[in-house]
Image (tube, rainbow, N blue to C red):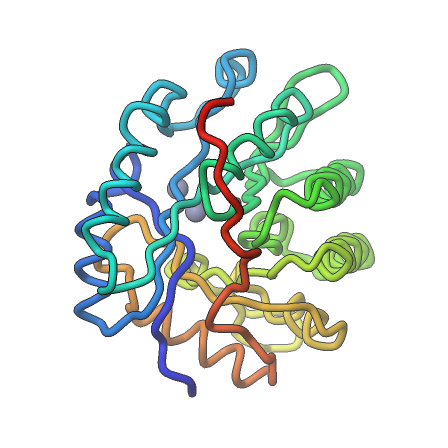
Length: 276
Ligand SMILES: [Zn+2]
Ligand SMILES: [Zn+2]
């Protein structure tokens, strides 16, 4: 197994459901001998969406007054010690489509983590719900539309729709095919997310022990289609960095014969326009 020395999916206290500040994660990463770490807390939402969802995360004001300045300060502090990236994990919503290119100028990359899905009547459902095939299709279409914007570098836990819809049936496979193809077409890394390994596992009909995500059957399909893969911790505590779940995720990729990346390739830093 390759040495584990990077993580591009890290949360901090600002989202109110993670513990620790940027420096806590970076110090621990350096201690572990990591070469790269990306901080990627949950994106702030616009008011009209936020009021319809039950979610904890930083506000728009905190993004400007705390998150961005803290990242800049930390990059300065840790220069030469580790490669530190600033990112966010963002849902894609039509009403926010102007914001993604703007954030991409302030950050190094964006992760797509689609936890909420829009319905035609303006309401939303959660990706953790048990849902109809029609709603699974909304997940596939929303993710594909988001990736087609070209703003996202990583698709977080692409298989999360299986969480409470665990049957690996024709609908599940159709969704998987669509989003794998969208990742390949847009040069987006598919993320094997170690956080799912920290949750309950179960036995599939073939008698294999599987996690709700990363889900074995899904990742077999990823391997056969040849998408780019990255393995991330999705840590919400410092202890999650390089824990047993991380090791298990790497072992799972190796056992499946997945050729994963340990570095993300980013476009050369073009001048960031700050005053837009
Ligand atoms: Zn979170
Ligand atoms: Zn996350």
